[in-house]
Structures are given as structure tokens and as C-alpha cells.
Image (cartoon, rainbow, N blue to C red; front, top):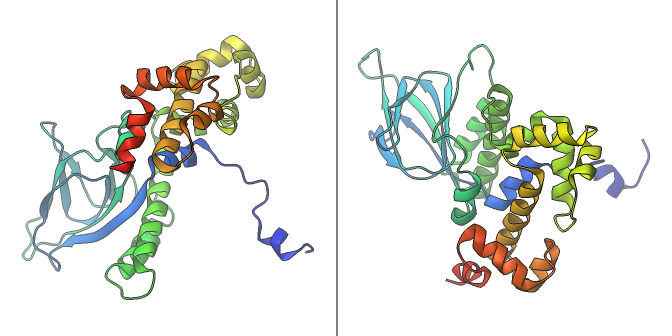
Length: 298
């Protein structure tokens, strides 16, 4: 093997993907973790309003969101509540053993509230993954064990380790969901169709470029009519509408998390003038770009 240390350390041909880019926009970050069991605090019923994941290893977990019917999780099942919907989670032992044998891992996350609410709104309130006894998700047990080792640890960087490990756990679980569910939001569904994924990658790589349906269809290796129909089926909107929405999502993220002037942001996402950008932004977010940015200052 030859090459400089810098070349050997680099990841070859690394290309970001829509899934990763959406996570960057909503700023998902691992927050905290705990185990619900009889050996810890006895509050096995709680109300929670953060994005979180529950992994049941013993007992049964009932999740109630508002007035919806309860969602029951059994052993070796996972529930993901990524929208941060307020809910109540109650852990019980259906076999009524004394003392009860219950155990549930819960990891919570923080997100950028303004953008997350819009981008994640197409998700179900509760995503349930089962069939994990026969088809376990690789690395889940290992990551959970590592998280719990770091929780409450006094080692340097423990809180950072917990955060990054929870990020990894979330990606692993969403990957499995993407393989098992057809009712996916566009930012996950595109990964299941290589042709549409190529078109989406082109849109993401340069939002300022006015890609036509003909150009995108060529990138996807499809006829224009077939491409437009397939894109709408997977992404839930026409290619042009998706491009415009992506531009504004990118702009909204930049306004909140950078000090770049508004006219520069407008130019970077493909608007010829600050005025045209402001009108489009106002139409989508019902708020002016300057007011949106002022939220960060507050």
C-alpha cells in the first residue's frame, strides 16, 4: 500500500446523502439516556416531550400520544418518536411477577425546533420496529451498552460520547425502518431508489442551479415522463417544487446558524435578488428572513 498519511486517512469517493443532509439541517443531537427498570427510580410511568427512542428488553411499554390509541411495545421491540410529540410512557410487567421484571432503554435527542417541525412533520407520531428477535439490528445492543457505560461517568468527554453514540443509534434504527416500511418521507424514500437518489443528490449538491426535468431525468437514466411520475411518487412533490423547498430549507438553516448576510444567502440558494428570496421565504415560512434570523439573537 502506498500513499501519504493524508491520502491514506482520507475516505475515498465520499459523497454525502439526503439522509445525512436532513440531519444536518434539523441539527439532531443525542441528548441523554437512562434505563427504566425496578433497580433504578421507580417512576416507570412518565410524560415526555422530546424526540426519543425506546428499546424494550423486558416487560411491556405502553405509549400514549394525546387522544390516540395506546401503542404497546413488547420485548425486543423499538419505538421511535422523532417529532418530539408529547406522550406518556408506562412500563409494566404483563406477567405480574413480584418484583416485576422490566427493563427499557430510553435515549432522547434535541433538534432545531423551527426546521425540525417542518421537515419531520411527515413522520408518524410513533414508529415501531419489531421482528428484532429473528432479525436483530446490528450494533444496537453494543451502542446501548456503550451509552450506559458513559452515563454518569466522570471520564473526560463522557457527555460528548453519549451524544455521539445516541446519534449513531438513531441512524442505525432509521436505516432499518427505511428497509422495512413503504410509507417513508421523501428524505428516506429516495435512498431506496438509486435513480431518484441520483437526481436528489444533484439538487442538493448545488441548490442555486436551475436543473430542468430533462436534465434530472437524464441523470436518473429515465425518460422525462417516467422520471417526473416516479419522483412525485417517492418524494411527494414535483422535482421543481422539491428544488424550491430545498433551497429555502438550506436558507433557513443558514439564517439560524451563520452570520452570512441575507443577500449572500439568497444568491447561494439560487435567487436573483434579495427581494425575490424574501417573498419566497415569507410564502413558505410565514415570516420574513430577518425576523427568522432574529430568533437566534433572542
